[in-house]
Length: 140
Image 1 (cartoon, rainbow, N blue to C red):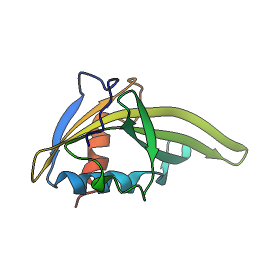
Image 2 (image 1 turned 45 degrees about the vertical axis):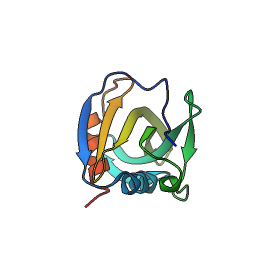
Image 3 (image 1 turned 60 degrees about the vertical axis):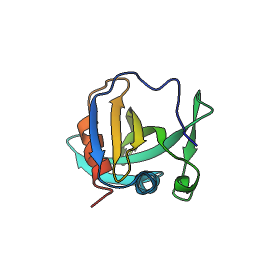
């Protein structure tokens, strides 16, 4: 079953190929669901939460987790929304920063998957090229 959304953008920032079958691509996308990364920036220590959503009923998105097992139910095409939420960690409390929202489309092309990435809205910080790198790191 295809999982596509009518609200998916008609233009994209970047297109690339993942040299893995579509089922492996879906398994990889599940790996980043609910992930949390910590790193340092000029503003101090940052906690980044990653939430992954997949198209549901062509009009909305439902959140997925590491144990969703999409590869058994999704075929041909999948529209996903990835939300990165950054929080500055301070001793006086956490300070939320911008959310970075990406729409990611995966298309089954046999031995590889064609991927389209669009950032919406365009806010400073994490870019579509960095999202491409994050996705490609899932497939060493």
